[in-house]
Image: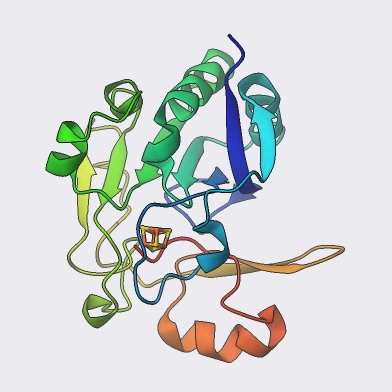
Length: 208
Ligand code: SF4
């Protein structure tokens, strides 16, 4: 069976969403409705770009410097089977690390019964869990608000000198032919200042 992912967007090679030089997949569709979600256009569960796992792996690793993948969205766990297959396919080519965001808490996730969750968790090095809560956004770290927990499911990224919770936030503005995209976890102030350029909340991860 050819697994396909419903992809909202991708980014090949960025320092803005985890340690090292990472490629990012944002999936389309999320069952949550967090107030202040930075990518509301990716909440509806509608067809976006339907991409095969092999095709995506090739795209994400096209830059030889890429040493990690970040899965975000939308809700990655709603497409866990496909993302697990993507992580495996990528790792056949290169030993990339995997960071994954989810709106589920880890305990809730384990009880969710969603297909492919255990499979995906077995591929993830760092899981950042929980919904975005605007009132608990302290403007720091790769997680969007302080209720979210950074789980080092493996030790791979625990000692690389990257402070997932307390580092100053970074975001990257990418100017394409047809759009301007914001990649990373921006502070609320940065989002506000860039809103006129982005024409809306912008493409940005992660504010869970
Ligand atoms: S912040 Fe994340 S979990 Fe919340 S609605 Fe947006 S995409 Fe879904």
